Image 1 (spheres, rainbow, N blue to C red):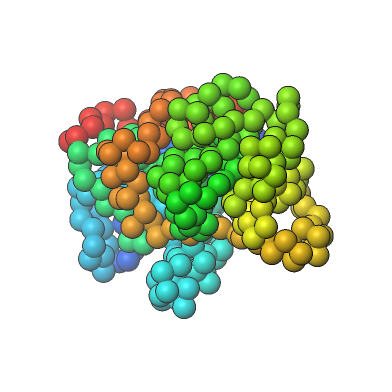
Image 2: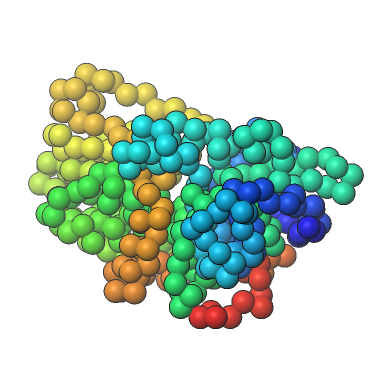
Length: 372
């Protein structure tokens, strides 16, 4: 079938809306008509050269409606409303112990640009290849996924809002709820108050953290952080973060920290501000490394650096949980989004990268009516 998709043709090039051919679905595949898709920082990283395959259809925060299912599909049927997330195998030791974000086939499934047998989902009219992203490529009017990509949601849920629950908001909240698991009364500092950082703050409030310290260089974002759970905020352009956090914690430091920026100096600070026995989670995509003195920074103070991918979340469990938190008024992610038309994708991407918009969402199907 013919679809309209936003294609990146080479590193650092703009999105170009093109008509592509989408392959027929196979027996274990599902055709989804896209309603909306969030734009994530990882899309910007891929666009800037952090992905090996071009041209490519990016996007991995999609929501839509199942249009067709293969003969082997059992859990979904046409008409189901779904949120798309990453793909995992379901049968390796990590998947079987409830850690699909640590799936042994994660990289192959999500970053190979094609099916396992090398065949492609998208191609141009002349037969030339266009690659897939995170087994989803949600910047398209239709896409092909698998059962484990999907989380079914009630039709009363506004599909225009919930796509980012499949990655950005899932990553931030899951890093707290599933990765760090802070006990009530513990303290946490979150560096970067974009979509991921603010989701982490809301999760820290849900978890009962007594001090939630937001660190950023933008006062307007720090004001949003105060509204969504931060007990204290620090503008790191104006204040020495290490000294201020020591002051706020009576020289102890915080029990947990999360770096969502990927800036080496910030990641370094997120370790230095830890209390004895503290845990740091550096979760941003970055090409740059951070030097750590294992003895002085970690061993002598019993600190831990913890890797967390996709919030250590099982999407089919965590996405409904986040929707319930939202309904209960505890996870107000709708305050962070701005809608754009599909053909405004380059403007939306620019607004995301400059910080003008915290979470841009592309409305791909403008005929969709919430609740239907």
